[in-house]
Image (cartoon, rainbow, N blue to C red; front, side, top):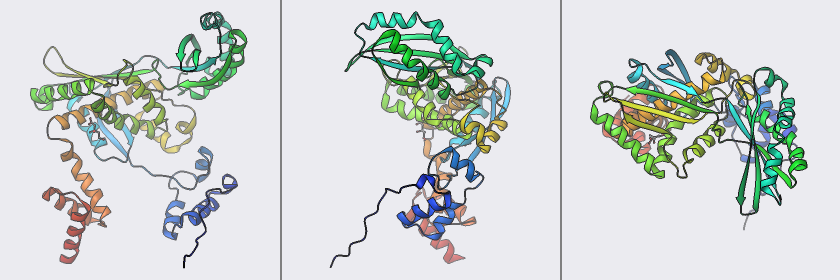
Amino acid sequence: MTVNTPAKNSRIPGLHKDDIATRLARVAAFADLDAATVSHLADMGNLDPQLADRLIENVVATMNIPIGIATNMKVDGEDVLIPMATEESSVVAAVCNAARQCYEHGGFTTSLSGSLMIAQVQLVGVPDPMHARMRILERKAEIKTLCDECDPMLVKLGGGLQDVEVRHIETAGGPMVITHLIVDTRDAMGANAVNSMAEKLAPHIEAWAGGRVYLRILSNLADRRLARARAVWTCEAIGGEHVRDGIISAYRFAAADPYRAATHNKGIMNGVSAVVLATGNDTRAVEAGAHAYAARKGWYSSLTDWEVTPDGNLAGTLEMPMAVGLVGGATKLHPTARACLKIIGATTAERLARVIAAVGLAQNFSALKALATTGIQKGHMSLHAQNIAMMAGATGDEIEQVAQAMVAQGAVRVDVAEAELARLRNRG
Ligand code: MEV
């Protein structure tokens, strides 16, 4: 005999209108969550449920990620503590170590190319794209007025439309005329500002150029907002010329091979995204910009460069788009993000972007140094082993004891942790 259980139905009308507790109860019924899980999810920690409910849709819970503090950082002559939100062990330690090893040599020197964001307006079906391009460019003054009207506050703060570019591109669907609005967004990340401008301008572009506008949206390839960081590590501080040469060789590998470059840049983003997240900024925007920029030459490559200084030391540089802001969205509303900004002491988006670039460079240094010498697992293992010990059920003091036993055996696995835990408990 077969027993028919009712099929689960993901169509839950009106979920968005429920309060958080009701939503959670409905989800719990759907997913068969036990009471302990429901009460765990219902605890929203230090984020006000009402705020959470306004930040996104259909909220049922929050996700806590640890924030660790990177120490030893000196950026443009100023010491700074940097909160990093990450679930990955070794990421915070990597920045602390890299910063310690270049601290005496001056730490990190940074700059920003500007705070310009780009919005794109896509025009299709234009019979004379070259002339259409000119017709749009001739309206630059009008475009500026229309765009600046969208955000008088931004203009008052010294921002607003700075330039207009019009590109003619060939696509599988024929020619397109793409207008770029280049906007100084000052201390805002700027997505809302530039998207409003692009939307307002769209009917005018159609009227001037003919054809039909479809997309009106910012580009995450924020190559007018490049954050740059450089630092020098002396051979003495890093353990000798062979370490320097190993790091440079690792960099050359990434520069030449996209398979390696993806991992190399992922390491950079371990640091960058952790600070972007801690400050309530848009991690996906920065990540998209980073990877698009890494492929700007036509092949995907390293975001950093490593070379030998005239006096034989190791010089590292990082340059990448850094679309982060201090105003708007979670940055302003999320109390943890505000606290993290206060810890960093960044009072401008520029300072924040520059500090984040320094963190990215530090992260890359530590990853390459570990990879070129002892390997990544050694540093990773102690915290990783603790995670595995907890997965096996260890609590309190047991965690460290089980972790140490696994590291000593060179076998960090759940089955080994379970055996060690059983042994420990039998003994006690
Ligand atoms: C791990 O999260 C990051 C690394 O793989 C980065 C790298 O390989 O350069 C260690």
